Length: 219
Image 1 (tube, rainbow, N blue to C red):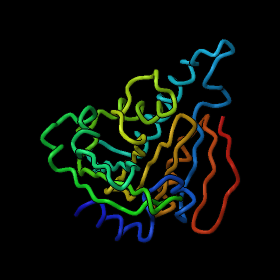
Image 2 (cartoon, rainbow, N blue to C red):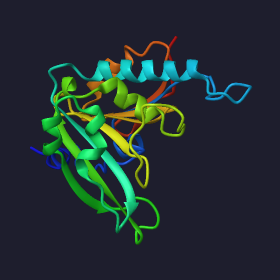
Image 3 (tube, one colour):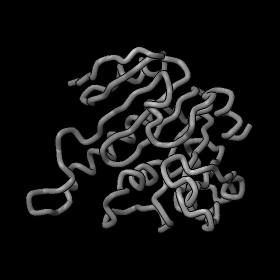
């Protein structure tokens, strides 16, 4: 089963684009980095903050994914309608088993935001296991989105990709949008309850079905 088919069955009508927390009935939004700012008073990057964000993002992902889980790694690249992107280039630095690169699926979809007449996006997906991916580097690249001096980064394209980790075994989607936070959606509320019980020290809000629960601050 390919990622597109899996999503149609388990997350029917969910568009795999940013703000999935607001697009699905069961989800969490988790803030990263606490109250710190990305820049110090001298306008230098606050590397203590970024190291904290990297650690938090990896910790959350490890709570959501076990080593034997099946997953889809998915990426959206938003671009002009005439542009094309070689599908193996985006994931290449982050995949351990290079033969997997030739199993990447790609399809083109209408632009999900404004200016639909001029833009579209390509969605790439790869079925794999956690051990097949350089997960710490991939998470860092997602967190470094707005700060070009920081490495690793995704190769230059028309835009910076959105990266989604889809846990096929547990029916969970994890999306880290940048250094400020991440979103998790799940088919069943139990998955979120298990995660929230482990989020000591994180600020998050959670909803199940149509019920919006209060913001939590765990210490």
